[in-house]
Amino acid sequence: MPNTVFITGASAGFGLACARRFAAAGWNLVLSGRRKDRLNAAAAELSGACAVHTLELDVRDRAAVAAVPASLPPEFARVHTLINNAGLAQGLSPAQDCDLDDWDRMIDTNVKGLAYCTRALLPSLIEVGAGSVINISSVAARWPYPGGNVYGATKAFVRQFSYNLRCDLVGTGVRVTSIEPGLAESEFSLVRFHGDADRAASVYKGAHPLTPDDIAEAVFWVATLPRHVNINSLELMPTSQCWQGLGITRDPA
Image (cartoon, rainbow, N blue to C red; front, side, top):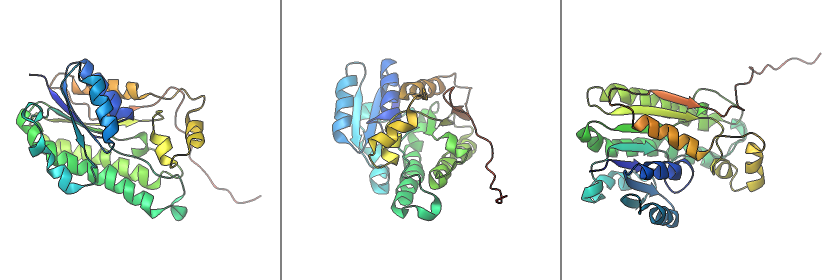
């Protein structure tokens, strides 16, 4: 029987690319997201290659997430790999000028939603005993930048939660990995800038960023390594991106 992968935020970007990559290898897919029309389109595209089950799901809804395992059809109930991809950035203002609604949405999705999904699927993962939890974090988990305030903090949570989860799951056979992409072109900046397409496009112009397919390939590699190998964290950047020097504010001459 094929392995089953459960992907959150599967309607676009990294999540959809992961769905395509795992479908190409014949895995069963459980695709969750908030946009039912896009999930249906993904299912129509991929169902010829594998079995697909879709779930209209907002990971911020604790009760809805908790009800997911019991709702899965029998052929999808034994989840082998969970890809916690649902997440977002909102705004790039300094903390003193931020919109608190943006902060709430990032915390509720990137932190609480990821935690809810992990807790709900852990019994299945432990029962299978040979699967993976793969959490999509960011280079922002390690490297600060102006305006990254709460977004970076949520991704640092993802990274540390992944490490602590490894400790809790030792002996179960379940692996845990934090995937930490740098500049990658998807809907990320469009969402961050509240639909401003020109501003979003300027982020990637001439930079040769990573693509969703690049991230999906890394995720698939992590998920299909021999069972005795656990990648704790994997940081990826495009060749064009690196770290900048520390900022210094100087008194006027």
